[in-house]
Image (tube, rainbow, N blue to C red; front, side, top):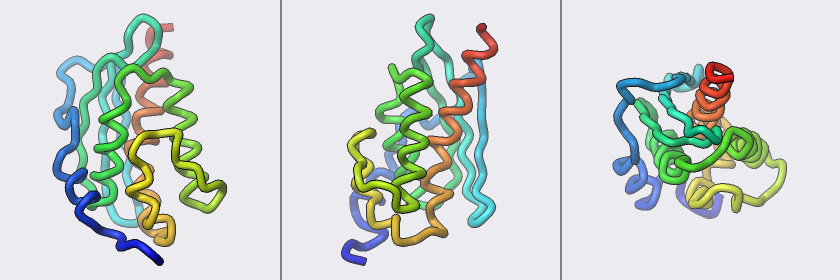
Length: 144
């Protein structure tokens, strides 16, 4: 383990989550909870006519790693389509279990690289990516 699990970059992200307020009128909402640690993330979305994230609201009750992950997800989610969100969710999950070393699919994720060695933290890190992919898919189905 070459890098500390919690560092200033993680803590800075954890306290600066963009879109950290629920939407009053979401098209869809998804909530994910980690059974390991109890962390919970709720994501509200609105899609534009092309099926991309137009608006986003979050409620994050998670450890610093879960908060940092939510911060990174929210900072770059606007404008993403369902396929990109599902791909990011799947690539993050694969990375955490050791399948591949590339984190370039989502800006800033390298700050979470040290957590790869801590499987008990993986679920919390994945919560926001899992939730936004589900919310976007549900919103698209509702408008189909």
